[in-house]
Length: 38
Image (cartoon, rainbow, N blue to C red; front, side, top):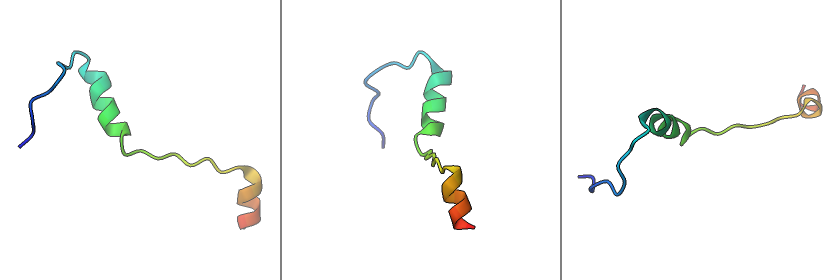
């Protein structure tokens, strides 16, 4: 069972987006790396 929330959430749109983004990982690969890979 989850504990009681410490803060009341007032901006649900931002909160929900933060939950979606929590597991998101972005990789930046430059063009020279892609060319070397092929």
